[in-house]
Length: 423
Image (spheres, rainbow, N blue to C red):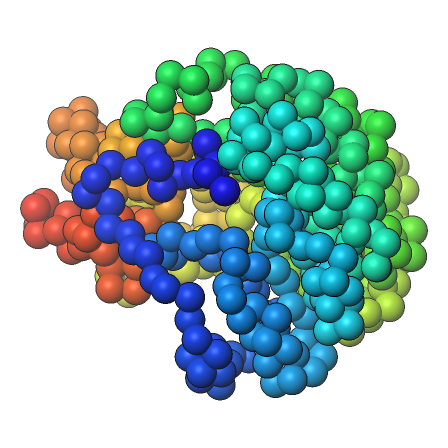
């Protein structure tokens, strides 16, 4: 494919990414020795510097999948694919492997839309893929990069409805984004994001399949349920969209993330649910680390606030500055107001994605250059206030502390003679 929304086509030249050849069966087998069978095997979707591609283009993909299954008998295998290379025989093979879940990046259910968005020359084959998965009983989740400014709102609506009719367990709708290097055709007015959220809210009233908007609009931290997957522990227990989780056994979750994780890791949890003005108790018949079927928007893990407090105490800081993205800033501010009980003065500073520009607002795409620009402006306007500790989002850095341009977060510490840590 040649997806018009591929982020790598909009990267500034100094972004440090790489391509690697398909890994051999021997290399894959060696990798499996380091993996934990308690967690799903994920193929084709990760956050790394490696420019990935379609898993089913690998010449030995079927042999590799069998190798994985032989090593991890009862482990779920999750595969992200655009569906273009999945035919009847391959889908039958996936069913025979057992415990395979497909994340299908359909993006458009029309030949014209697939061709425009993805350069798909055999779009009809891709469009049949959800029907094949349904026919052979292979569970799948659908995903759509929402670009109504290119394909129109009707195409987007038909694609989401089609995925729902074909039995998608959930449908993720990714809001579009573009960098300063994007061609004019890919750019859009900021108002389109609000229109998308309203469009999805209206569709939720007509479609029972949980629709997940990424990134979500987070206005509070209440652990409210956004959707329930059919024929799952949560679905069979009668949990409904809009229910509020008050307790998981004896734990009172503070956020959606905490509630979701508590349910996931608990065997046979009893949930106290608030539905309208009543509280009810619901038992979920599930194992520990088994999916509950609950769908919840991602907000924040309260453990992050605990980590912030630990770093402040360890560094004996009295004035701390948390630098984060436009998306995360409001959520972190809400969490600090509700959960932080320390004595240090904390300020949150939003660093804008000037390096990528355009509509980019994600923490994982911030660079040291962005942090320096934001910090310079802050220190100039801070009337003499100077933090003795700066905390940066770990998502912006690799395991060696380097951003996407290869610069270390320690460059910031040296430039301003300040203590800098990542979270």
